[in-house]
Image 1 (cartoon, rainbow, N blue to C red):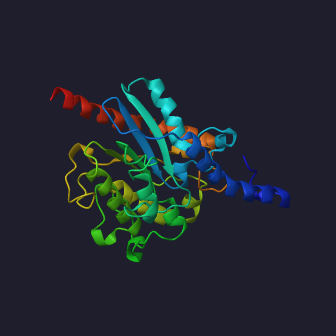
Image 2: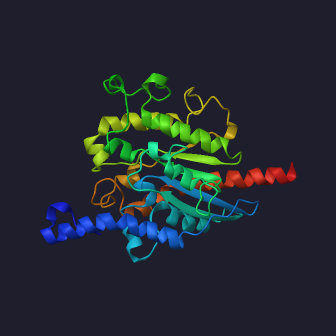
Image 3: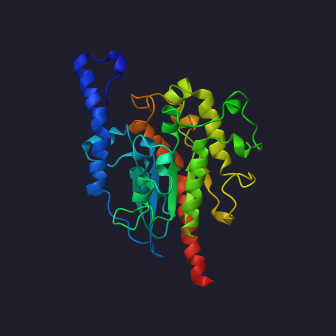
Length: 297
């Protein structure tokens, strides 16, 4: 793991800069050659794909330095297998891309079309469970598009929702992506993660109020009572589910963040994978039950 910037001499600073540049390329290399190819789903075979920015990709997970897979997608397959609740075969795919924003994952954009294409590498199109981890880079790059008057007001209480004109562009983008994902596969389940941060992370220390406002709007997309969620379509029990990505018992621990203050390190990815595994597993079980109902119905 690279040393903290404040303690680095010039030689180490150069090494850290090189590693920061090289690390995502190494993850892409491993995913290309070792990531596997998604097969079309059947009653016995299914796929999970995690899409989003560097958190989804696993940037900061230095386990990848010795050839291991990066991030949550690599870890949950072992966690869920040990729980022994899943009855069919599932493959897990890492579709994250460092520095990507919510706009990059809109339908019709390069990242979305690559992941959800009919091609060999179109793991998302063949996945019946999609996990979205999007929004970190929107905040860091100043591309949230939150109305100024919204930022000047307190955040609405639980059960109260923002109006359409108060939604930021990031959340509108995420909503559009979710709609297309649910419309294009009648069995698909979508899990929406709030933006990950915690005590000592850059988002929490430098962008606290924007971060809180965006997360409130993201979480509200998973509330069935919210008239601005993912309508006008009724997706029934396939309504997107919220996955909590900032539990204090995980991100609040010492030594879980990467040196950049944005991503997790290997310890952090292990902890957050343990935390979210049950939510992802529940979505997988719902997909399996859909097939079972089709067999007996």
